[in-house]
Length: 343
Image: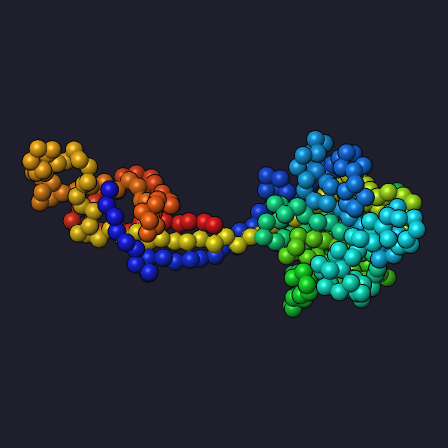
C-alpha cells in the first residue's frame, strides 16, 4: 500500500440536476389511489387524508387537506368558539408557509379566495422539489355528460417566475404536461373563478381553487360540490378523493416528476510515471536479507492498481473506490483515476 497527499487542484465540486417520477419506484403517473380508514378515523383525519400506493396503507404518496378561513367544512374544535376548526387551522398553517401573513387570503389568478384544497407530496417523494411542467392532474366529472378535468401548471407559458414565502409560484390551469388549454380561457383559467390553483414546487405542494373546481364542465370545472357544512368530518377531502378514485373509464390520473440537485465531489488521483511502481507486498522482499526477491523488479518493476482508498489526516479510510479491472503501472506509464463521491 502506498500513500500520496492530494493537492488542492485534485478536488472539484460539481452539482447536477436529476429528475425522476414522484411516486413509488420513481413512477411518474398514478392511476389508482387508496386511503386508510384507520388514518381517516384518527385525529389526523380531521386535518388531512393520506393517499397511499396500495390498499395496505403503508406507503403514503401525498395528502389531501382542506382549508377555510372561517372554519367551514369540518366539526368545530370547541362548540363555544365560532370559526375554530381543523379547516381554519389548515388555512392558517398555509397562510404562514405560503404567504407569510396570517391576515392575507390566497389569490388564484385574479380571484381571491378564503378557502382551498391542498395536495402535499410526501417529502421522500418530491426530494428537492417538484419539476415544473410535468404535472397533469385529471379529475373525474360529477356530470353524466361531463368530461374529466385535466390540470397542469403554466410554467412553460410564463416568461417571469413569481416568488413568495414558499419559493417559486405558478398558476394551475386547464391543460396537460405544461401545455395550456386555451379553449375556455386565453390563459387556461376557469370561466369566472380565476386559475385552478397554485403550483408550489419548492415545498412540494399544490393548492387548488374550490371555486373553479365547483364549476360545471362547460366552464372548465368538474362539479366537485365543495361543502361548507360545519358538522361533518372531513367531507371535502373525501369529495376530492372521490374525483381521483373514480372508475378507470373516467381516466383519473396524477402525473408528476421530482427534481433534486446532487452535489458530486470529484477527486483526481494521479499516479505519475515515477510513482507506485514498486509493490509494498512483503512477499517481494526477502525476510532474511531484505533484498528484492525478483531481479526484474529492481530496474524494471511493474504493479497493478486495483483499489483507491481516500484517507483523512488521522489516517482513517473514509472512502474506497474499486477499479473494474487491475490497471498496469510501470515507469513508462502515468495514470489518472477520477473518483466521484455523490452526496
